[in-house]
Length: 278
Image (cartoon, rainbow, N blue to C red; front, side, top):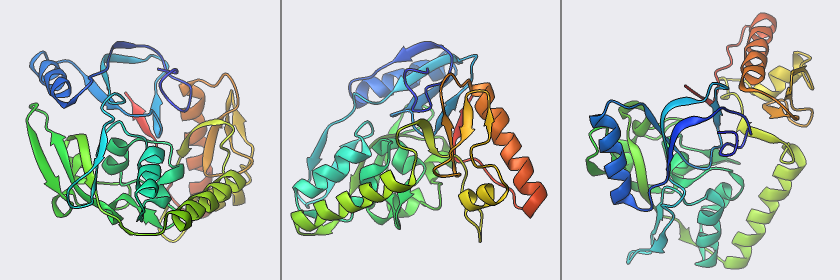
């Protein structure tokens, strides 16, 4: 799984399946459920940490479910495997504003909706209309914005165990040049502040109420602190990076150390944003 995650760590899965459309996705989910196989859905592998022992079950990659089109209402429908970058660029090409924040998020549409991904004062809930989902029985149904209940890094898809096959989004009319300029500006800010040149899973911790995780970690004196190949980024302390040869064990041990130090020094509990498998 180190080949399929942005952290570049993780052992082997028993089965790695790549459905090419929603029907194949449905068949896979039903097959796993009926045969009592463990399974999980993978997008671009960001925000994910797979154990060194790997995964005893089926990994279902959605990257081939990547169709995207404009609807008759001027909305954008995108498969779960479409990258957030491609979604934002598609919107820009059609003069649709509101998607700029998504341009630098290193995930896919399915994962973006699943965790209500956001950056630079924008979130998926700002543009989300509805999603076509598969439940644990392999049945399809649509979930609208109200029912999806998107909040800070959460959604009904998480609480109900739904797989997002595709989603529809709505922006607003905008000037293509101005949209492109906005995306370029946000990208420049990311390059300046985030360790984009190193393997990571993005922001490691959720934002604690009333605080910023990165500042707490920096103030705790942990900038650059390492365990094995895992390191608290020297550029942005909210990121744990793989400086080379890191194992999932290194990352998990470093996460726990950071949590313990911040709790001891400031009385603040840091919750992980990264999902750990298994």
